Length: 211
Image 1 (cartoon, rainbow, N blue to C red):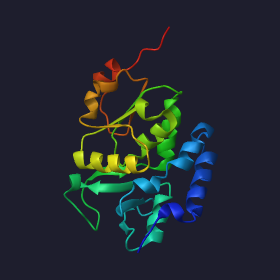
Image 2: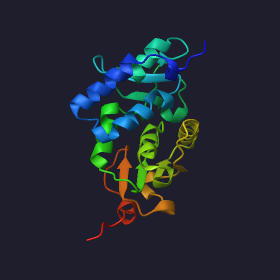
Image 3: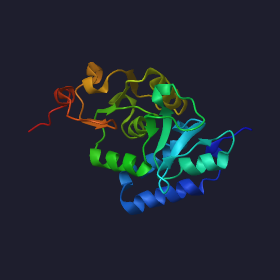
């Protein structure tokens, strides 16, 4: 079966956009980015959306049920895209989620809180699927976005998806807690990884606003 989500009617995605706007998660200055950067383009065939009612991850395979896959992609739920550092291939859920696609409401609330302006440089820590880096690149341009991911295979898949969409930020494999000096200083740092304390590398790599 040939399946192209970009050529399908997407009432679910249109509804998601309305819900995000009405909730305030999606601000008007990010609306064109939401329209252009499709979450579905960053998701694998086999994935595990979180059932908010049952509080469990469920298996959805695009090759077996493209309708259910698309409905999950267009829902405001987190989706696990890798278990156990890739050691668990599925089809059922694994033990530990090690890469995921955040809820769209979380993604666009974070982007809104970032308060970026044209020309700003951003370090995106935790590339994951690449969607957030893609959104930042759409807004700021490829020269102003650096995204870093510790998992080499996750990074490679994200890079491939981004290039396929003609979104080409600098994609780095490395420890995000150490930052990346290549394009420093940065005006903003966006992290979608767990933190116990703020890494000093992020502080020292920030651009200091003019007084």
